[in-house]
Image 1 (tube, rainbow, N blue to C red):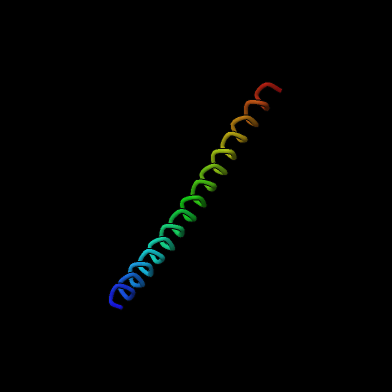
Image 2 (tube, rainbow, N blue to C red):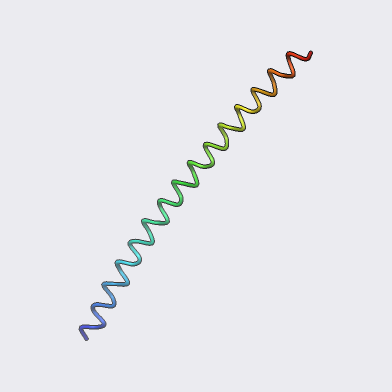
Length: 55
């Protein structure tokens, strides 16, 4: 009986840790997407300026 209670506690802790890890991964992915968007915008502006210079 004690083993079952201990196992349940361990499983609950595991699930809480996994939820936390998933939240961190989601935030990291959002940050990566924002960084990629910023880089894409910067490259677009750079290319746009180069095109204007050539024209």
